[in-house]
Image 1 (tube, rainbow, N blue to C red):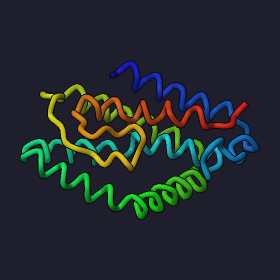
Image 2: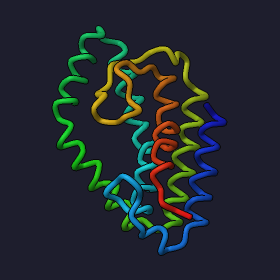
Image 3: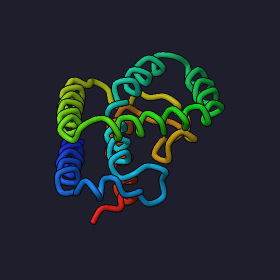
Length: 163
């Protein structure tokens, strides 16, 4: 997992460094974002990990039916989530400078490395809203969650329209 996090970090830096300003403004393939906004969205997959891990730790202490019900409620709220997800990535990708994105990536992935090193039981987990992201599974363990941002990153990497 550490190697995958580092690969994604290095790839993110390379993509951002090698892209011209014109390429970053170009529309991505298969999304409504431009390449810069999509890169921020790819970073967002790492940024939300603190919340995802906290949810899993909390819900894993409860009966499975509780997280299953919570996931159903979240699935029912997919449309508002999609709007917030779109706007957050649009705003972050539009206004956060390249250096800010680079620094945020480094800090976030370093924090994930430290958290992963402190984990005691990666088998704990909960049900997740499968309609919110193509990488979400019905039930995800902490191990699955640590893999999620890299899977999310790789999924969207193919949608960038950079040379």
